[in-house]
Image (cartoon, rainbow, N blue to C red):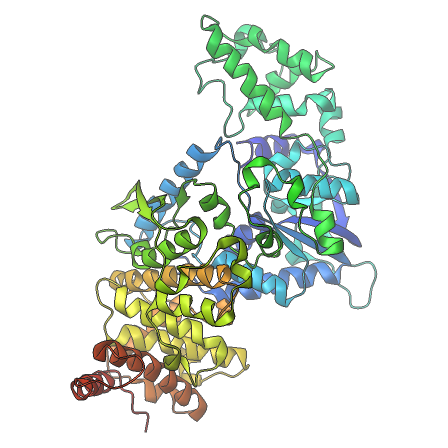
Length: 626
């Protein structure tokens, strides 16, 4: 989470950072901060649910710049959890802030900092396609990142100010100063480099004349997220302890300056901690004082470098030894460890198995309606059931209106999953795992026959969304969504229809809140179904997510389709795209017909009525592309 204001404080003391021409080195990258930074710095759309293909393009450009300069990246994505829940209140505060941002964006107001809900999955898939080594950390990632960097004697790149405190000999490269877009890249030259600034604890400690062992004490007292003396009623009045010299220029952060001056009088960490009570204005409550000092001491331990598991993973492709896991991770079945680290299993299962609260994602939607996350709750209930068994409950945090609230959600198990055991789930027959998946979504296998395998899951999700979304999506919403899938397929094949290209070049339309709400529900369904598919060890192939949804395009398509435009007029340039559109639409309508007859495997006495109903629906969706 970082230390508030520390990055700016170090920038203000410009001599601490040194200019560097970074090249020909390993680099440990904080992946979570990277995908946040790449998305927001590239000004990709935030209002329409995400333009994932634009984000994919940014990621590809970034890693090309690294490789052009001989930089060997290793990406670490946060996945583990702080078991002590010390940061949970801060997380809730950040989520409430994102809800407020989403509400502003839904009203056409300014807002930033809202990531599309599928962005982490897209990022991992792009890394895989680029063959960039990455790990999803099942422990607290910061210590693991710093430990690996020290082990390999290479720097860390992040925007997390905690890395100003870890004693990494090769230093820390703040992403804010990492000018990858201005890389000096002369073809075939070994002198290509990326201009950046490098930080080392040596330069910091020399500048302020303090022992490097005292940096964790500085971080703890300055106020990392879960230790702040002011918040626990032990304020420090620095002017009573260290009056500023009368001729000294005032600092932009005098508290940090005075804290560092105070620390300079000590040599050992424990000596400084023992003297903290002398800084406190009121020391009447000894019990609270003891608790505060214990919290400070524990916080300094988070910066101690310990042997990690990442080197073993990157070199030997092995997960941590289960016998060496801390107690709070012993709930993870052995078979899940390697998929978790490879990022092919959602890190949310760690929270669920620990019976910890799960915080739902925030999207731009109509806040007068229930959260779009409610649409896919039945899917999450099956995930809970597979992990915990039936009749257990998981606490979920989600919005109600524009306020963050919590509720208990029951775990359920489909009929096909009644005999499945979590410890052996990966060994269940494919047919059983597929049956559980399809039963959860209410789709029959015959429905998906004839579709390209990588589109079976998106079509199944779309059918589920039509049945569960509220309000019920109208015809143009479904048509636009399927046309967006066709567009993604054309991009995958490196083809483009001029009509769709024209819509993209026209730019984003004004936000239609009803459309945004419907598609926020679809994206949440996609996210939770992807998690279910991963937990069931991929009964269906996982699609390339960046090609499934382009928010600005599908929003414009809805506008067009509510006018005089029809799907066939958009797809007439390429017969194969029309065939794909028709195949997906037929699969969805056939699923509706199967549901109407109540006979997944054969006709019923009411099949004629169902067929007539389906024909009327087909007419509404412009199924004929002649």
